[in-house]
Image 1 (cartoon, chains in turn cyan, yellow):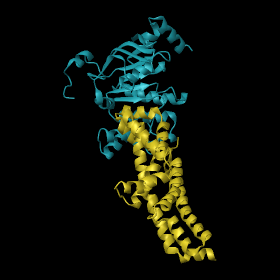
Image 2 (cartoon, chains in turn red, cyan):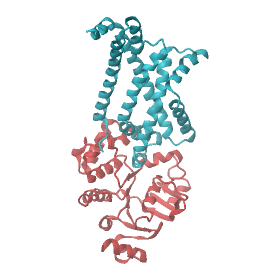
Image 3 (cartoon, one colour):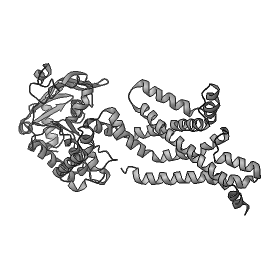
Image 4 (tube, chains in turn blue, cyan):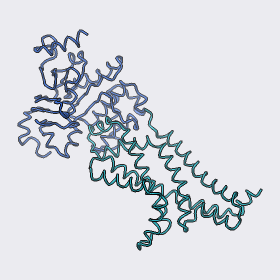
Length: 258
Length: 219
């Protein structure tokens, strides 16, 4: 931590919170990501879109090292992920992640789900952690569910608890991996509302989603990925109106006018 | 009522035997659960060499008859100059033997915990050992409470072998044989011995049901 602000990594990340530098990743013989370059500034909300199997989830999972990359480098807050070694655990605590399948801990109550990280890793007192958890539950709109168990909640409520659990670590970056894809249509709104408020509060976010309404309304930049490469990126309005590449226009056609 | 008379006449011996069996079972259970969890932990952590240690343990203790383990732990060790006493030898052998089954059961429970749980835990910032201890093992153990109950009941019954082999442990079975040798009321004596074991196994069954209701994860 003492080296923060010095060294070659910072030069490479150039003031961005997240930088992907020629990131390549394969599963066996299949190349999933090919020389991905992406820089995300503090406070930016980015939507990553693309056909299924295009590598968007894999890219997200590489950023917090749930997947290891084959070549290239990923910088988070000026530090190279691959050079983190055991420090990767510390780094992950700075990066919140929300999964498609929620992945709440079923043996713990909502409150315990949210306080586990802060008490164990941030060494907050139980009382402080619970205060923080209740505030977060307030923020995601379900303060009355503190003592419920995940099984008692709807999908939308579970996902909001998952967001609260990630926020409880006070992360610098939030990753969302298709957060609404497993939800019934009537619950998608409540989760997107929470995410929109989060983006407006200045949280840096990278969101993999098919919710183009959300992209249009909330994100600063849309990144379109196909076959493991970034095909184009820019403000969402521009992307929807006048995508440059044929593949992107094709995608817009399918997803907007289906 | 000859049946009751046998119990009344020999009650102190039956009671003492019952209490010894309780001790054998209690100590063996603690060993089985403690060692079993550690071995299960070895088998699911990523390091090859430690995985191998866990696998060797399970195959050794699971594939040797309990009776042979008891001979080794008592007579064998004593002949090698290590005299740990009958109680330690008996509970040690039964506990370590049962631990192999506990380890295999907990391991299957660990694999029943989804990859998503591990990823959620890692993404909060937990290390692998913390993830195992705080997220995976608690869920795994809850999932395998019913089969652990079966193992416990088998262990209670297996404890009779200690009394049969290690002449020093005065458990239910040993006392029953002594009473039988004096009274020749074989049917009555072993009826009460069986009741002694039933009290323990039924108690274990009830305890497992209770734990199941309290702890098993609703999904």
